[in-house]
Length: 274
Image (tube, rainbow, N blue to C red; front, side, top):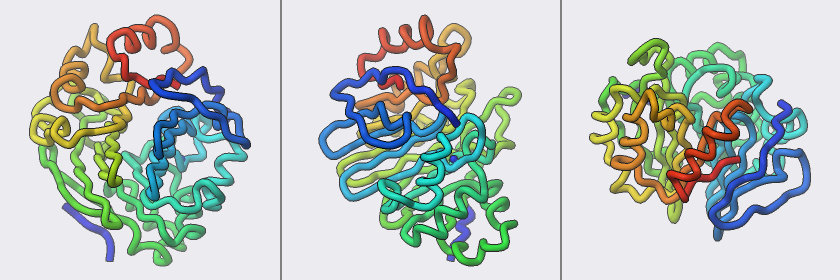
């Protein structure tokens, strides 16, 4: 492990919520959110989310200027740490693809929010390090480099985490994109993200991580994990080794709505589909 110390015009479909859907003024993607008790989950981009849980807040793969990223107004709020993004604790960047990460976008948020810490892989860290302002927030960028199959347990801002590498799948078990799966214990709420993943050949690392024993509340799971006709391993991993209370289906495109999303909803009553 290397510890370097020391995210659009998205038109959201109706959210399928297991509890309630609430609105919020501002950009159109705020029109749908999942809210339960003190937890709110909002989708900001195709793969990106914002989670507010009690006194903790997390930006997940949403600081990007890609065309699949946040709407212009929301991106400005994200980058300038305007409410509700002013008290973000963690910025989780699973990998360096442009629909998940833009260096200047992350940098701008860090410069406006001295509270936030980034947890990511080395490719993202290296892009941030190339920016002239990097030294101003270098100590708030935690970059990990786990070997395939290794599960790293660590803390960021006092938040316990599990981090491990997953294959991005271009092609087969390809780890070159530095895609990191991450679990964060926010106190009363635990979240997990797969990032982009090809589930084939990934059962062993999930078995080692044993997230099913961590009582995951919200698992942000890539659509690729549900393509059971060709990749039944993804469903097996969800059922046996994640077992989340809620499944947030991530990275959906227009082509997925209909038969594909209905199949997910029919199989998983706890699925949240924005």
